Length: 274
Ligand code: HPA
Image (cartoon, rainbow, N blue to C red; front, side, top):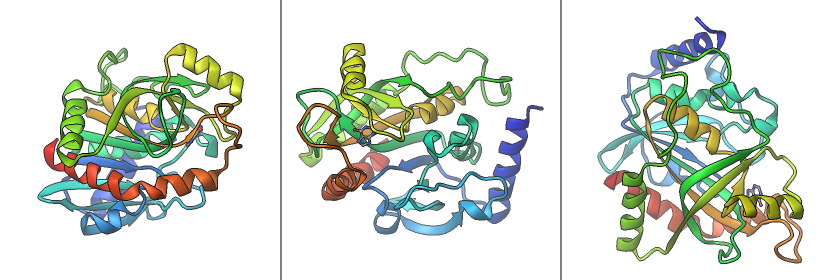
C-alpha cells in the first residue's frame, strides 16, 4: 500500500473513531465564508484537525482548522472550516488529504468555495462566479505518485470536472434568489505572493477568468474518487495590474466579508437543491 493511502486511511479511521456521522455533501469554505459553519449549519459535531493524528493543519491567519458535521436543512453535510494550501509548504498529497477523507466518510458531492482575483475585465469585486473549468500553474497534480487503485483509476477523465448538472443547479438556485452569478474558468497558482501583472496577462491569454491559490487540486482529487464536484468563487479583487491599486490580504478579506451574506445564502440554497 502507498504511504499516501496509508496516511489517508489512518486519518479517516481517526475521524471515524470520533463520529459515525454520514455526510452526503462535503463543503470547503474559502475566505469570507468561514463562519457559514457557525451560522447556517445545525452542528452535530466538530473535530479539530489538530486532534486527527498526521492531519495537516492550516497556518493562515483567519483560517480555522476543523471539520464540522451537521445539517443544512435536512441534508447531512461535512464542512471544512479552513483548508490547507500548497504555499504553506505541505506536499500536494497533504493538501488534498482532507478532501479525500470527506469522500471516504461517504460524501458523494463536493462544493468548493474560494476568494479569487478577477482576471476577466468584465468582472467586478463582489461578483460570484460558478467555476466551469480550471487551469493549474505552478502546483503539481495531486495524483502524481503511485496510483491509489482503491480511490480511482490511473488516468481519470477530467473533461467535466465541475459537473454540468451541479453548475446548472447553482445558476438556477442563484436566479431564484435574485443573485447574479457569472460562470468562468479558475486558475490555481501556487502563491503565496500574488501574481505579477505579466502572469495575469499570461493566464488571461490561456482562458482564465479568475485566479486563486486553492481549489483545482482538491477538485482533481475528488473527481478521481468519483465525487461530483462544483465550485463557486467570490471575486474579492481585480487581479494584479488591472487597477492602480496594490493587492493586500486585508482588502481581499474585506470584500469577501462584505458579500458573505449573499454567498452564504447561495451556498445554503445549493446544498438543498443539489
Ligand atoms: N490572486 C491569487 N489569489 C487570490 C487573489 C488574487 O488576486 N484574490 C484572492 N485570492
